[in-house]
Image 1 (tube, one colour):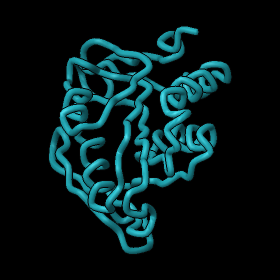
Image 2 (cartoon, helix red, strand yellow):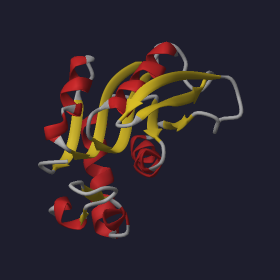
Image 3 (cartoon, rainbow, N blue to C red):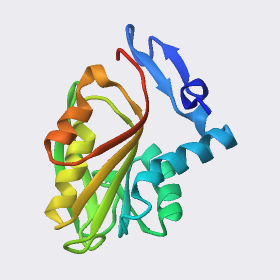
Image 4 (tube, rainbow, N blue to C red):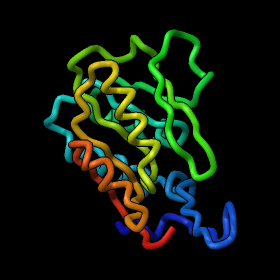
Length: 175
């Protein structure tokens, strides 16, 4: 199955010149969604992943499904102020400013093997912040997997330069 065909492209969203890759059309395609989860999970079937970590919000959808597939736990990484307990946090750069990611401080135990999941990797800033949060907790990030890669924006290389192998399912040129 060609997963790229299940992803809708919306030109000029959220601003002129941007080609928005809408993953919701893949998620509503039952065969496509199932295939994406299987492909994201496959490289890690024998890795004995302790927890899959999903980045808010679409990373929750794919991450929880991959965790089920791998018989692993699931941990959400959220934007600041959404988690009610003690947290680790990490600032990261956005196109126009900064934001903060958080994870419950007791969600990961030192030495746990973690797979990071999100729907898309562009510049890599959010994934980089998530990896830094995980490392603060003592996790071993064994991989990062994304449905979509925008290779022109360099995020994959940024994550690989952190020593984390990256898996992606489809790539789109441009922004």
